[in-house]
Image (cartoon, rainbow, N blue to C red; front, side):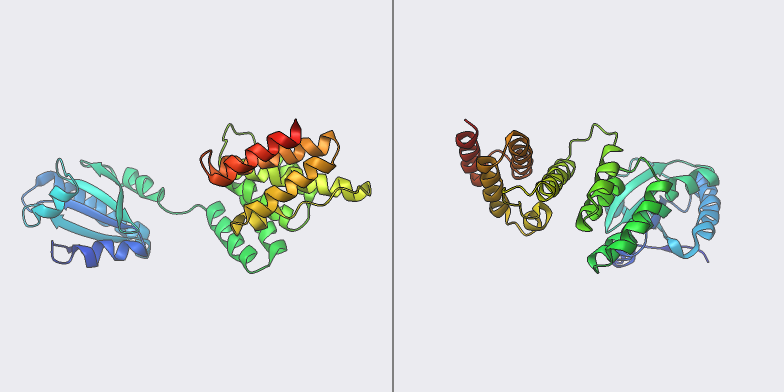
Length: 271
């Protein structure tokens, strides 16, 4: 099936609306453009390769110059990819069919990403064990994916599998210092600390689940509990609680009023 031509009048409905569901490939050209005709043959093969996974439209820049101007088109032929109602990438000129296929492949999720998404859905449905199994498979397929590793650590902590969470966290070899990584490090420290206190019959008050309360925006509950831990615990417990507080400060930002207040409280508790 030959691609449809879209114009100024139906561009939003055909391209932008459709791209919310599947990637849309749009070829900008002109009917009297020789290179455009040559590229058309390759794009027809590309469309056949991906079948229903992409939509394909054409735009004649002479008939719809407003669209070309809006997307700052420099020359033709140009192929743009639209996802979620916005242009995400483009290439210019006549490319071989195989190169175009490789170019478009990057916009589809990998098997590991699909497993990760399924796991997130299962976890939200309280099926943590099944979700964990999918994440383990995803990590085997894509061992360098930091977000999958962090999902595993987070879910292991949800399931009370502290040793497993520690194992996966220690396998993370990244200079990434994202807020999520920092928060998970603090959560793991607190879980280990609470477990050790239980095993040693410590009198120190357990710290509430950091993940649960921070998600709900109830960070002050955690910060108050951490201050109590600092005031009543030994040095190792104090250090764990201090690191957790600093992780929350980093997440909230230096200028957050709660950060300003609790920094003073932390300083008073330590010195």
